[in-house]
Image (cartoon, rainbow, N blue to C red):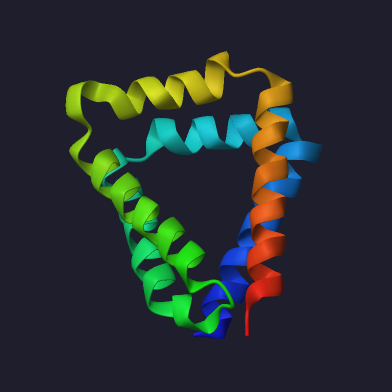
Length: 123
């Protein structure tokens, strides 16, 4: 299960770096994906990621933190799938259109820190 944590940490580092270095391109890429794809299909990814994180949490020095992230990913997937009152669409609009570049880069920094922490916590 170590490889699952390594894969997740690398994905977070890559996407965080991309969000910092290529902010406009990253935002355009996400905008295109969210316009063309069905949200119910997109909801499968965080739900599956959450289950994988829960299963692989024992391969970490801090399994409680990995479980915490996994539980939130499952909740996010269920929330996107149900999409009450079109809230997910409003959040996507806020994230892609209203968020400043500095805040978008801040989320990239947080992703890099999270990926680096998970990478260093693997047993």
